[in-house]
Image 1: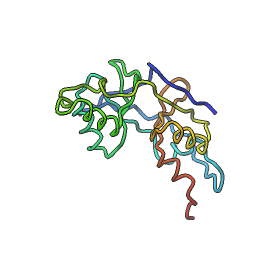
Image 2: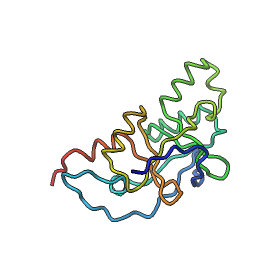
Image 3: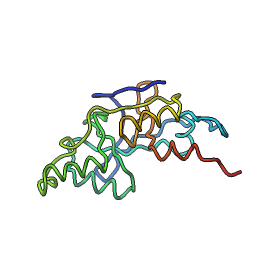
Image 4: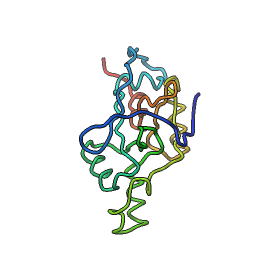
Length: 168
């Protein structure tokens, strides 16, 4: 099991038009159905996709909230000017920032609310073990790292879904 706490981890991202940045997808591995058995993170990513939405840590918090809403997602990866992963920001982090700063939250940047001590997993990690890690750490999302690069993102919902029996 490969669990990492990533602080200042260097990932990759490319620009998209809305101020947010999207990490380019990693080449997909062939999906093998593992009926009734625990799945690997790479199998879950092969099924759900490798897209990861990212935002600059200097972007306004309001832009982060708009991006989360626009894409109907719960987390953005925070990047530096060269696309390095330096943190994450979730809906929960935005709410905590609003409680801390009040109306001033709209003038704050992503760096004021993002989590810098990021827990990540590897492509070959076991989904059941990652569910335990996420439960113990009280986190809903895990960045997936492969060969030193950000390869995707899994949510607790993704991991729970893979445990449900697949209809044939």
